[in-house]
Length: 313
Image (cartoon, rainbow, N blue to C red; front, side, top):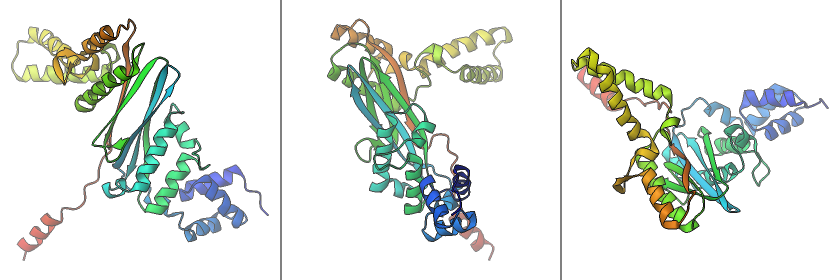
């Protein structure tokens, strides 16, 4: 029998899009013949996954999970995509999203999460491949994030939830420091709901991407010129608007949506005072919105086509 090397398995996986264990089994069944192994996988219905890989997967779910660790907590959020909302409503898909979020509690990056093993013994990536073959749609575990605190809470919130822990927007909010966990979790959830609604770009002013500031500065400068503002005043006008822009997109500087008279920064400080906590602070947040940044392919406009055909008769 031919030796089934790791390189051979990887080659078959690249050609078929099928999980490592199934590729290895296919090569064992076909004495290491790549072409015969592909046919074997096709016969088993597994290589269907490869044919789906070029389809845009912009629907799906965001899932969150959390657990307590000593005096602190860890939480994760993942985005699991499919081609249609119909599949996202499927219990099999939802359970997979929840399992991947739980798995994300132990891994800091997406690559590590893809290669990690679930309780069933298969890797996350192989589970995705099996689901593609079973359901018949392209799927991808696109994003993953994790936050942890040694003391305090990491609150989670799902907007437009279709079942507990899964929906279209997932938010994590890390509150680090001492204080009653129930009170901190209530505060964290309120801030998470705020984050879901406002989509801040950064936690603090210093964290804001310089490229985002420069892009906004360029837009505001062009606008000031279009409005005919005096050339010697444009820089000053724009800087004032940039300061306002930063307050609009920086989480700690934003007015709290449930009480616009206080900023998020003030809200945390007020709660810390009520709880008698001298070190409570907002240490991080994550917001994953389903399909963000995915270019969706629009289907043909059949109504327009029919109207055009009728008009040409």
